[in-house]
Image (tube, rainbow, N blue to C red; front, side, top):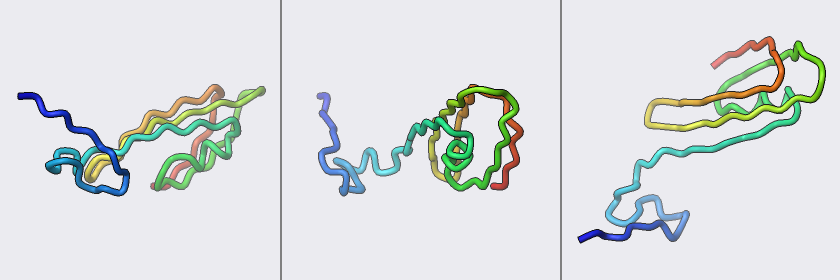
Length: 85
């Protein structure tokens, strides 16, 4: 028998039967300013200098797992990137 499991209350840390208790947290952040992009990655201190001219667009797709942070970053311009975790 298939059991329909859904989350109905965001404050409930353990979903039905605890199945999703440790589900990863995923988020996407967009930026139209290089400095905003530098601040969008969680738990990193970053500084960017934009090499290319023109409008900037950036996006960070971030996934938090137990003991691990995975992210994919996209920028529309070439950047010099200085980071400190």
